[in-house]
Structure formats: structure tokens, C-alpha cells
Image (cartoon, rainbow, N blue to C red; front, side):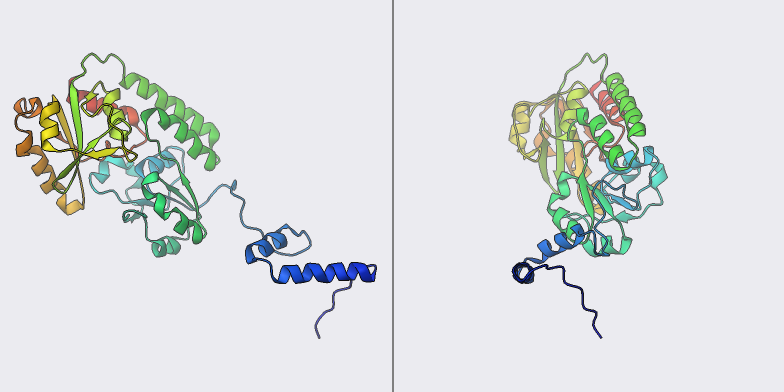
Length: 313
């Protein structure tokens, strides 16, 4: 026999008001009803985990977030797969961590994420289109990817805060600041530099507002694309434009499926349209397959120091 709840209405008028509230709830949006139920202290329902709760099972889609987590003493349950040079951008401590294939423009496969039973994902602007989908399957998602060298220590602190390790984050950020300062000290040469992303046979120039562009500037390079802007930090560049701007150094970053990287690298190293540039005539066309110019890693100072060697600084 159903249990009848005792009435709390003290008068017919109050009863009518109560029936009106019930009718309103019957036709209210489901989201509103859930909010009201969770807010009711008298119901034995569990509210969703607060957004400030420290996550336990974390996926890091980028080398920077994964490496930063590792340095803070937290190991992700999976990391994003990079297109090339993976060994040089992920910490050795992550060698056994599963890799998740990432597809433009949304990033990871949602079904695969569900099987991992994660509760949090560190993502980046590159996979922004996939954020809503990840949230729909119950994941908390945060973009904590630095876009410039100066943002590295700040984003490190933000990741540490999410992990409940703010004190360790402050120490790591301070060390990163010192490394960046040391890596940019004593620069004397400022050669003209073109950094290009090779997608198939099409080169895209790194602009000043790209991660790689900022690294090169910090290393003393003068980008031949200075003054150009694009929301994504890259712009298509023709061979004619390259010859006209005549870079002293060209750094090519091949991008594509792992099996295509060597072919793309060879095409960029011996590109006929660049033969009359200072870079080609002095054999200063370099190919970087480590991905450290394409996206940040935790050790920005190390990346800057590597570019300084290429530039003769």
C-alpha cells in the first residue's frame, strides 16, 4: 500500500497554493526540477561533484599538461597522441601510459574516453570543438595550455591548483621562470628566421602569436612574418613570399601522419622554391621533428636553448 505523506498545509488557501506549485513542477524543464531536488535538504539524493573537487582520474591531451602533472607528482591515466617525435616531448615517466588518438577538430573519441572512466580532462584550444561532447558524457574539461612562453609558469600554477597541489605548483613555476630567464640571457645575434609548418606539400608560416613564433623570438630570431596576424597563429606562405623576405634561417616542422613525416621532411629540406634564399645557400635549413615548436612542453627553457643553438646564439 503506498505511503501517504502527511499534509503540511494549514488551510484550504495554502492547499490551493501547494497544488499550484505541484502543477508548475509537472510542466517545468527537467533541468530546473533536478536543481530543485538537489537543493532540497530533505531528499536523499546526491548532488553532482562540485567543480572545485580534486579530480582522481585525469586524462591529459597535451604534452605540457601531462608533463606538468608528472612534475607535480600526479600521473594521468592516458595522454594525447602526438604526430611525431613523441619520445622527446613526453616525460619518460609516461612511457607506459596509454596514448589516445586525436582527430581534428574535436580531439579524442568519446567512446574511448567513456571506457577509461575518467573524471577530468586537460585539453587545449586545438580541441575546443570537442569540449561540449566531453562534458556531455560527464567529464570536467579545462584548457590549461600556454600560448606564449610567458604563460608557462602561470598555467603551471593553474594546473597545480586543480590537482590540489598549489604549493608544489608555486615552486615549479618559480623554477620555470628561472630556466626561461637563463635561456634568454646574453643573446647577441638576431638573424631573419622563417619557421614553417609542413602539411603535405603546403607550408604554413608560424606567426608571432604562435607558440613556435614566440620561442624563436625569445631565442633571438627576427621572424620574417613579423606584423602578420591570424587567429590560429599560422598563415599560408608562398615560395615567392619566402624568396622576397629572404630568411637567413629556415626551421621546418613537418606535420602529418607518423608514416608521412620523413617524406614531408625531405620535401621541405630540399624545396626548389627556396634555393635562392640565404638560408638555402648557406645550408641553414633545419628540420625539427620533435614537436617542441608546434606545442609547448613543461621545459620551455630547454626549447629556447635548442633554438638558440640553431641560430648561433
